[in-house]
Length: 510
Image (cartoon, rainbow, N blue to C red):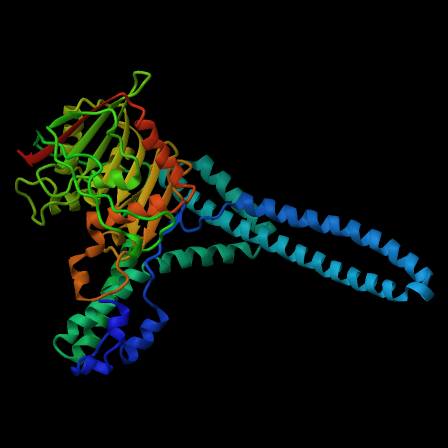
């Protein structure tokens, strides 16, 4: 239901019931209006600012001030000459004096801007230092902790206001990431309660909104969805059995998005999917050509849970891409490893049967420990992919996570691409993600509100569907953001492989 449709009826919609845009709720929603669904691509973290760029810009303003000094000096000499001939050049002398005043104002402005830029750079550096200190304390590195604390003290000594500015930036990050999911939960509660009556609409909105906010605070403060570089799965899983199944044809069902598109309305019709080939296929052009093409290969409906593409490169080296499905069963236990039991185990840091099945599928496909691996995972598959990168058994060079409930600090050797929906309750379990940028240079987070309207349909989690993330991935491809070039280069490199083997695997416990 669109905002325009909701606005047409009078109060109560003529039914005597409350509506999310009526009365007090309308006033509150005016303070937190619907998102326009636009795509945002950032470097990740609480603050995505290049402090060196700020400082170099401040230097340029300082340089401009020096240049203006030279101009004023020359202008002063000229003004003195004109005053010497005031009988003929009085107006010109006055003009020169006025120009000197303007130049002095420009110098003062340049000084003020340079000082503001340097202060902002100091504040953002403190945010980065705080994040690095948190990681250093987690790993117990006393020398690094001492060095970071000393640097932090020097920054504060030089810029006393930077500490308050850094706290403000961190507080804003900690509070604003949860806004959309809380807003939509509140409105869901209003419409759900409205089915009973107006008093229940108020109670339902307040209760569900408060519970959602409390849950986001707990996950945010607890950090359960933020995986540190040393996070490792505990315990053992299995036994599990993986079986090859017919592999789906590549590049099917990718949304058509015009270049520069940035909203849900830009998603066009999907291309038809070609017929599925045999269980193992060999092709010279099977590499995905875009992020959306990669996302579309994640197994969904059907028997497949893991897709493995093995690439033999022109120099004889090997690389592999693994695509990992999201949860397939709401149950706990049973034959299906991709269920809620595995969800809870992975989120709590325990080995799951789905993780064990993924490793078994990689081994069955001939991917060996230490091999170069690129990972694309959706939902539970995102958690599995995060731990594949953290455990260190494979050389995970790329991690693409779609709607993952965790955010992993995978280190500088892994390109991290995280695609998130702000209105996805599963993504909210990551607690807003890490406060600092994670992954290799060129890593990024792409985020948007998938379904800006809110209502009872939100209970079906439309923002957490794999098809929704394929659409958002297509928007990323069409965004023109220079950071997308990094992951595109990975696909282009794989496209050079003269030999590609594709196998998909079903899995079951036992």
